[in-house]
Length: 51
Length: 193
Image (cartoon, rainbow over all chains, first blue to last red; front, top):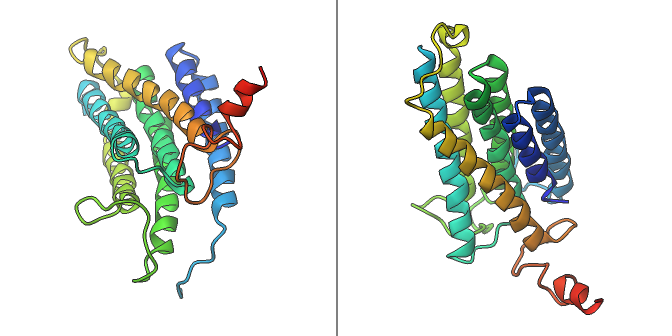
């Protein structure tokens, strides 16, 4: 699961190498969304700070 | 800004990202400093940000490619800031070994901020997008090395993360490669056959 963003970015690079810019951008967006979800999942501790 | 100069700066930027990802691997493999979940996500942030620079090198500079880098760097900066805030109160610990008196997540935040500022500066000049002259062949080796190394490091992180975390989520403080753990991993998989 944690390796999914890297996999999507690597697939995007592969698509870019094959001159498929739209597919590359699609893989990048998917990777960014997965990264955001994983960030949310890993925000488990409450920050001990006053803002 | 001539497109050759833009291409050179993008290549140098991507090599800088490659260097950061490679140093993270050296810290993991040489100093046996296994990355925490947020550290792995920051590596992914560098990959997301470097992606835009790679697109600039493969397709030519476009504002949308700089947008890719800025968004990736912004998310990476948020990730590293979250980790800085976890340990910002003195006496609440830290994660990993400091380098030049700063922890890796603090260095990561500085690097992400520099990437955003660098992209903003590069975006000031619109002449690179007009591309009046053809791409120079003189710089073809450097962008090629930068993009190929970046792809290798992205694929390397796929396998590294699989080894550390297995197929699920990572433990908060990893002390061993989960996939080699007897409870969950290759040993059990091998015994099945």
